[in-house]
Amino acid sequence: MGNRLRVQDYYDWNLPTVVMSEVAKKWYVVRTAGGKEKKAKEYIEKEIENNGLQDRVSQVLIPTEKYYQIKNGKRVSAERVLFPGYIYLEADLTGEIEHIIKNITFVAGFLSENTETVEERRVENGKVKMVKTVKKVPVPLRPAEIARILGALDTLADQEEETVTPFTVGEPIKITDGPFNGFEGTVEKIMDDKRKLAVTVKIFGRKTLVELNFAQVTKV
Image (cartoon, rainbow, N blue to C red; front, side, top):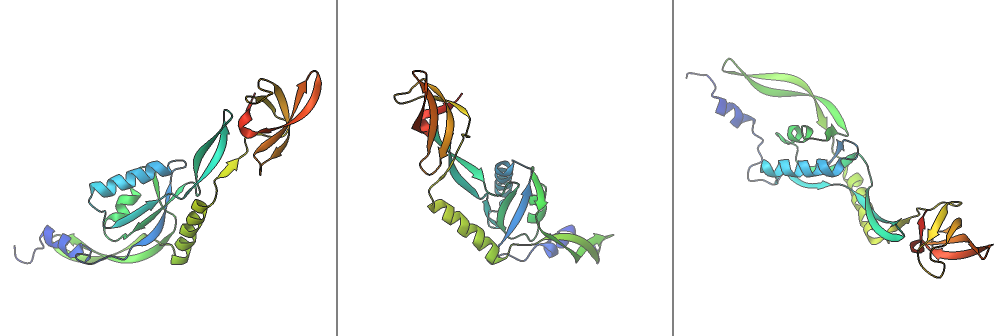
């Protein structure tokens, strides 16, 4: 074999030196296809598991908040993404992790990247050469930035869920509960703080203003 380099030697020399030591992970913002945040998160977690890289990726986070909406006269809890098109990744991106993440379905890359010139070992004709290449390197979030995001999520978790008002002034509605069940009317005023509506209803041919809960009416 002489001085010819074995392929295994090349890979041994290029493996990141993280064995038996805890790698400091950082938070990164990953761009995703619109509306595909949950799918991208699912694929990232599956790819990490399949490659046995759980020690290199600690968390894949989609910041969300809960809210209430009225459907068919009922108050229903739902969830929405706080930052559409982005997910947050706590990871050590040395080695192959960055390449794996970028090539996952619905992932469009990292939000912030710097251009750097790096030296890489390459094997040509059995010899090792140091070659300079230009590549984009993901930039991690600053500790203060991720602390602010995680702190906001904790605050949202402690707050009462927001109610989204599905009605507008002047909109026709139908009453589904109470003494005026079956009557139709028009929304005159919305009281978000009380989750109530002031509705004009025709009773015995005369317009009468009644106050109803969101849950007592439905859209016509």
